Length: 201
Image (cartoon, rainbow, N blue to C red; front, side, top):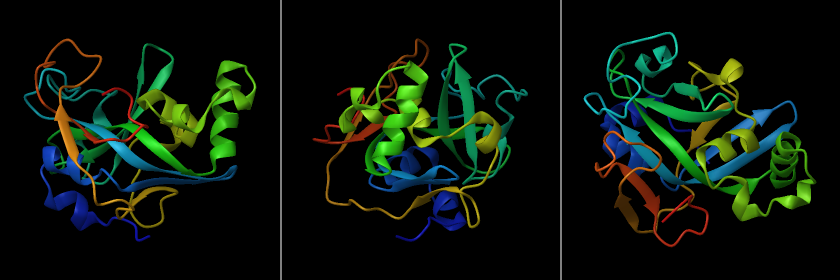
């Protein structure tokens, strides 16, 4: 499959990009091996949205969110988990799409190993459905890190990238976001209807 190029990330507003990423494949080519998964669930975070990290101002933590479209914003939550976002909109605006869940397609054994190491359990503990059905889960399973990927690019030459859609014939479900208090009523979460890999329906 072909990598998504800069034009793809630039031509959509953030809400549209969150829907257009559904069905595309997130790929990480790491020294440990290649892992990949189809994006089945996303959330959009916009300027003016009280749940958006860029709502107030640019900080050291959220600086990557103000980068160019097609770059990566990784952040720490609860002091122990990381989430990965695709930066959208024009540089300096501070908008992004959170990747909430994947359907694993490659490197499933490696994903299980990474998840097991974090939990201190056997790799067989995790079924394929459980590997990436949440934003922190998929970051761990895919081997995405703050040090290696925050503010990096998804474009040519990057070891973390997204390919053109592997799935196209599906219903896009629009609903409210999960795990936030401010802006919780906004219909900014999208997922592939009928997918058993989403975090929550």
